[in-house]
Image (cartoon, rainbow, N blue to C red):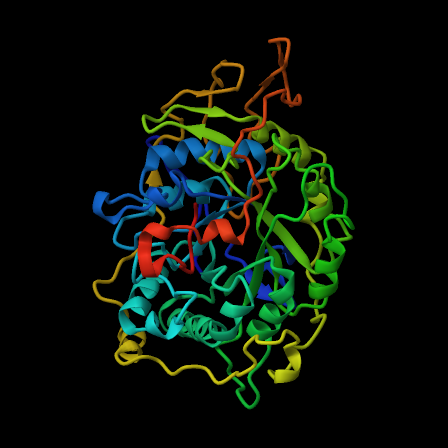
Length: 483
């Protein structure tokens, strides 16, 4: 298991490492403390899908200065995990991964992208399941497997969003999970969880979970079973409640899961600005079987979900949502939340895969998975070529180089990442740099409610919005898109 020590020499700091997490008895576990880990995350895709551009050699984790600015702001919020959707395995990510590692943050990484040939398609999935596609997904794994703060990989994102896609996609999606897990087992120095990020479409949600998390009969080493299961859920809008947002239904589905379950996206933006009252529920004892969640999203894009307004030049401004989220996190006792000892026995045993697990008419109930496409086994055996690599590197300066402003126009003073000690994880209060929100009378008040007018195009982000890239022609509906 990778481990690094804090080192200070000539002003250069080798970042201390967060403790790689393990999956045991239905939860994420910090093996150093024995505590259950709750994800306090944010979706991180600056520039939306355009933030990933192989021709320009750009992705969300390729620019050290950008990562430094954003990690510092996330530290103030209390974020301990980022989810990154679209990555270029051919780029070097050492500096950004090291910055987020020093800031006490894990990375959940999607292996797909919105480009043609880089995702399993929701229609005719057999046409997109071939060796070159798998080579690209394995390359993402290869590029990030050696960072201690790599928490896990998503083999797909909302590839199924209705009964029709549920009819054909499941065997192929489970096969991709199998293939990635086999690659990790062969080439990584530690187990790294692989799972699926589902659309919260209640008609097929339970069936999706049952399909991915059951155990194939007679297979004592079933590599196709997911190590974690996540869902993108926007059912809690405004000042809702546990029952009104149907969180009680989610608990009934997942409370006995034998793998970690969490929100891979949450944060309905109607009404706007958001109030994030669901935060208290997500980290409460009511949310049995859940391991936290990831707020959608860090950067302000046309769909109006952002915590921070960015410019291409580098300066940034906080949105009212940033203060609202910070206020909600500050109400919780995360030392207690993160201090719960992990269970020593499993809450449930994985069910045997059977058509009896599937209740939705038309949803695939065949658990015979497709065989590896020609050439893929050789890639798994020998590794991808050319082979990317990643390692923790020295960071000489943790100061943010650009001005970041509160929404009243004042500049946040002394903004910098605060490197944490070896094994520490970020939480609210780690970085105490002051931020303040302008009130309606023009004065500054920390964490006050915003009086801004909701955007005309503000609307809940749902599955349909994820799959509306018509310009991509026949490949419009892809497995991993961050808009």
